[in-house]
Image 1 (cartoon, rainbow, N blue to C red):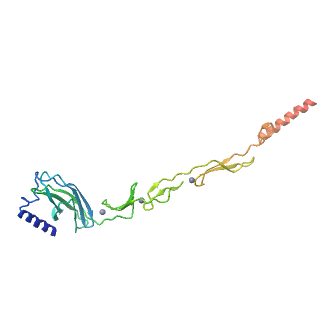
Image 2 (image 1 turned 135 degrees about the vertical axis):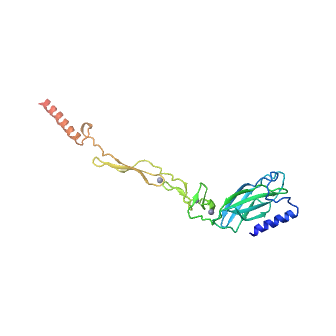
Image 3 (image 1 turned 45 degrees about the horizontal axis):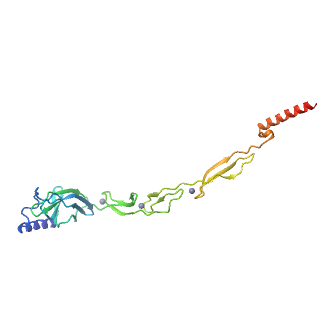
Length: 249
Ligand SMILES: [Zn+2]
Ligand SMILES: [Zn+2]
Ligand SMILES: [Zn+2]
């Protein structure tokens, strides 16, 4: 209420001094436009307001005045200098305030620019939010805390990505293995299969393994000596030997 008193005393003094011809709250099309782009940011028991200077339409802006309303009742306000920001303090967390600000020209006052805002103690929580560059904590009102660039952890490996040591966001994907050539790890024999594998040329991890087929032994007439080919082979040999023997007798 002190600020309200201060406002009325200030306005009375200004009017007595002839600085302003009419009560500043009376807007006129001839005076400055309403302050532009009013942005209200809630704080702990306070509202931080910023705005941009409007066109003065030839009526040079002298200072600004803000008002605070709760449910339509004026609960505070102040005449402030020719500035583009102010902080209303001593407010009640959880209460919605309507904040209005207008410019006071040499002759007329501007229309009001206003918006609502509810002060509260920010709750930033423990969870990190992040984008490609930064991480931060954020209150549900959108206020950010701890905004900082990511802190890169160990460089990415074949299987592990590089992540931020604070928020764990992936900064670089795992590179994947670089498979080398096949290397025989067990030679096959005519009775047991062999095996071979590929290793990553970077981390030596085995990236592929496969078996090598049993060797085929080469028998008579270049034929396979394993059964049933083995049986056929000997059968043909005996038949041929039989013909040769018969030719001799
Ligand atoms: Zn908040
Ligand atoms: Zn991070
Ligand atoms: Zn690897």
